[in-house]
Length: 306
Ligand code: SAM
Image 1 (cartoon, helix red, strand yellow):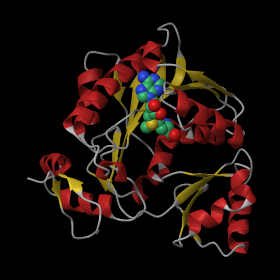
Image 2 (cartoon, helix red, strand yellow; image 1 turned 45 degrees about the vertical axis):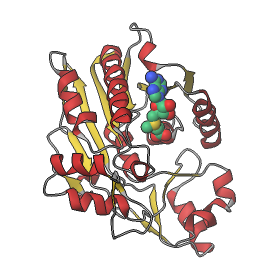
Image 3 (cartoon, protein in one colour; image 1 turned 90 degrees about the vertical axis):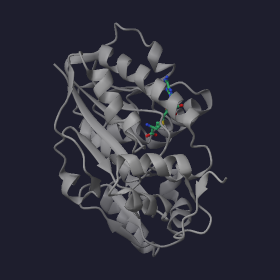
């Protein structure tokens, strides 16, 4: 028997049977919408790199090259490209080579906004490559935060360093290390844990790799990383945990198991974007973004250490 469920809305992509079952169990009323969102073609989106230019300058350049775009109500620096060929057209512009923009999904712009970096803070980006969120954190604070960006995989670490340099993110200490092995004596004001995950909210879930084994290895890694994050977060500090998965075993269930008995707790998310996001029902302190034409499926949680 085939392990995939054919979906009429797209010719070649299919929802894996395991994911179909898990989504149906967790979101009995929304599973069909989620699957349709996973299968649909997403628009290319980008973030203007405020370390190097302004949103106005980038918009002007795109308009002068007849590259159609739309703005995003909740983030001045985010743009949605309208045309089929928008990405290729932007890549051909000098502003791309100069690191004045970064292609990034809208959902993946949310964790740094929730972490809300402020000048003078020390921030750990625990699992940082290729660096979209690291450079966003630097840009949001106008280069005013000291960021330690940790990445375990050597090839991805090199990509991180390349992106940091191209984006002009100077005050970043890039660390090629396993974040679960960081010294317990470290202390950070804020931590971003954008954890390795099954990718169940993205097109990656459709590429044939989604399986029980992947899911359990992700949950194990997420648990170890989260435990370390809790240890090295300053008292009064904020931790943002995010994944591009919709599954509770990687998100809510994991958080409630790991946070239990610690001095950390979920804290309400107050974000300008809230009213404009396609959200699934989310418990306090979390956001679960429904995948659609503009957004990848995504989970973000804000945690405070008391
Ligand atoms: N935050 C990144 C961005 O916005 O560009 C994406 C991060 S990706 C979801 C997760 C990353 O975690 C991968 O690059 C993976 O190699 C890395 N990783 C996995 N386990 C790790 C560990 N124990 N320590 C450090 N990095 C790890």
